[in-house]
Amino acid sequence: FQFIITPLLIALALAYLFHPVADFLQRKLRFKWGLAVAVIYLILLFLLLSLLTVGGIGLVQQIQSLVIIVQDALRQLPELIANVSGQVYQFGPFKIDFSALDLQDLSGEILGMVQPLLSRTGNLLGTVAGSAAGFLGWTLFVLVVSYFVLAESKGLRNRMINVDVPGYAYDVARLSRELGR
Image (cartoon, rainbow, N blue to C red; front, side, top):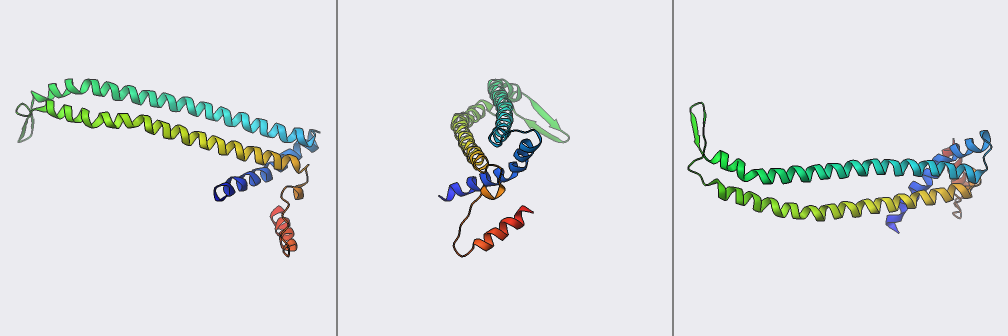
C-alpha cells in the first residue's frame, strides 16, 4: 500500500482546500452541499481535460515536426556529403582537402547509427504514452476520492477526516483545531 498513500494524502488535501469554495457556494448561492461539490469538481474536470487536450495537441505537433525534420536531414545527408567531398577548404594557413577522403563510407556509418536510434523512438513513445495513462489514472483516483470525501462531509469540516487513535483523541482534536486556524 506504500504507493497509494501519497495519492490518498493529495486527495484529502484537495478536499480540504475545496471545502471553503463549496461552503461559499452553499451559503451565498444557496446550492445544496452535494450540488456545490459537484459543480466544483465538474469545473475542475473540464479545466483538466481542456489543458490535457491543448497539451496533447501541442505535443503531437512537436513530435510530427521532429520526425519530418529528421527524415529531411537523412534524405539530404548523402547529397551534402557528396558536395563536401570534392571541396578544399582553407582557413588562414590551414588547408583541409576532403577530395582525398571517402566520405560515402562515413555517410553509410552515420545512417547506420541513426536508424537504430529512430527505431527506438517507437519504444520511447510507447513508454511516454504508458506513463501518461498512469498519470491520468492516478489523477482520476485522486479526484474521485477527494470528491467523495468532500461530498460525504456534508459541509462539516470535522467530518472530512475522522481519525480515532486510542489514547491520542485529545492530540488529534487539538492538531485538527490548530490546522483549521
